[in-house]
Length: 61
Image (cartoon, rainbow, N blue to C red):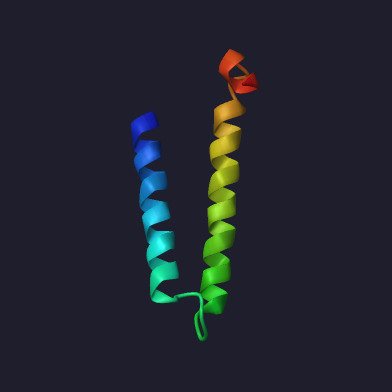
């Protein structure tokens, strides 16, 4: 499960950097880019809360 989540984040980072390289944030796609950033922030929040959910010793460090 951990390896799959890590590969998912790597795929998301590749997708983001590809969008930056090709200028996908420019008009007329800036709204889609903002939505993608919001989805990324939600993904990060989900990963964080999934990490601290067990309240184990690893969650505090």
